[in-house]
Amino acid sequence: MNDVHVDIGTAARAHFATTDVVMARLMDVVGPYGLLPDLDCTPFRALARAIAHQQLHGTAAKSILARLVSTCGRGSFPTPQRLLAIPESELRAIGFSYAKIAALRDLAEKCIQGVVPSRRELERLSDAEIIERVTQVRGVGRWTVEMMLMFQLGRPDVLPVDDFGVRNGFRLAYGLKEMPAPRALAAYGERWRPYRSVASWYLWRAVELAREGRLPPPAEKIRLPRLLRVRRKVAARLEQLRTARKKRARK
Image (cartoon, rainbow, N blue to C red):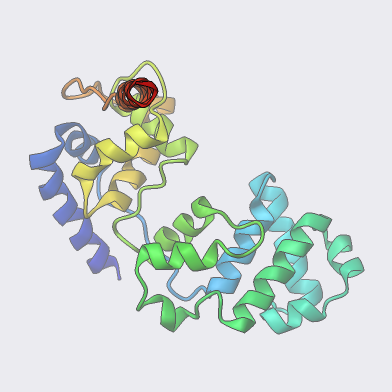
């Protein structure tokens, strides 16, 4: 598995050398690509962990999950069937809120029903198909599924544009004054295909480098797409057309 990810990192570095010199330089400073997915983790376990971590400090979430395993999982992570059999009072005592209990139970039910694909089925589905199906689970949004795609499935071309760390890393690495809008980041990130997961991982590392005072200045200045300005122009043009049609209709 390490060899596979070394190959992905090497291929991404060669790609970025011709498409984005800032990203290529960042890779050189950070070093080898280090995202190693947990391929043994089931979709249920990955998503249950994600739900537990929502709006909680990582340490607190890990403690709750540890209690879930020791108290209700009989030493291992509960199956969907086992979780549905756990009384609400026990889940509350472990530390889950009512909202998270509802989300966990909905997740368990949808895993049993097949709405959430099995690990084997996930391998056959595209990223978009996985996002469409898994976001049907209560409390699971696009970002959560994107993290699963990257960290459990090892998908190489995921760009979580709503992730604060990715956006902040882009701002820092590319020397911008403001955080990029998600749509602008998505548009710029098209040049990273088919290695957008690699780019995302290095943007997270850029935040760490900046914190340590080791982030180099960008190799070149960039300009993000003016998506908002374009939308305003389109809206203004549409309004002009509507006004013209109304005038013609009155004649």
